Image (cartoon, rainbow, N blue to C red):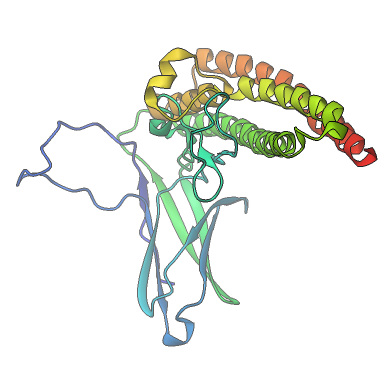
Length: 303
């Protein structure tokens, strides 16, 4: 690996709009820290992984690099890992025609949700980091220095508070995404059972229980996102955002719209409200996953 230049932690600034075809349009250099390494011909085709860790040894980001022989560069955008993306495996209620995609799932789309940077990883704090390159069974390290924007009015203490809250928000978003994934698998299983055994008289009681359990699971999902969303942007005007969307909006506001300043008191108050709703939903979710669903499966086995 080659030495890495100091990387400045700039916040993006909106510039005056210039037409894309203009001859005076400039282009900024690649943002972040360039991690450069040389590979010999004997490493061609091997997997290349780069782990970025902070001074405490905590993993900040995992990157993939090229295995082409010669000089290679991977740009770390100075961000932590982004949040987990939930995968919806059932169509919206009363909209069976919404496609699930070739892999059997569809994205969770709502109004401007795909535009929120809140689901991206937050910018890392200024300081020293270690990038570890692993090629096959061989590893090398290089120091990466992240430098504070000299024009930023925010202090290091402000940045620390901002990052701490954003990581807390991302942990909650990841929990919501994990719950959505499990709820979707559970509902998919129940819906397929109902289709398969609906006309079998021996299973009528069981299928009624399946319908009730699926409706209960759907009611829990409805706390996390608008389950009627089909993917069309117009749908967003018919119902307010739920926990997943509201968390994404808040995670966008804290590090993005607030520049390098600490979270506001109002942002902390909103987080407390959202977390209280998440705790209520988690209790309903755990009852479904740990009690109701196992009891239903046991009943099916007995029949």
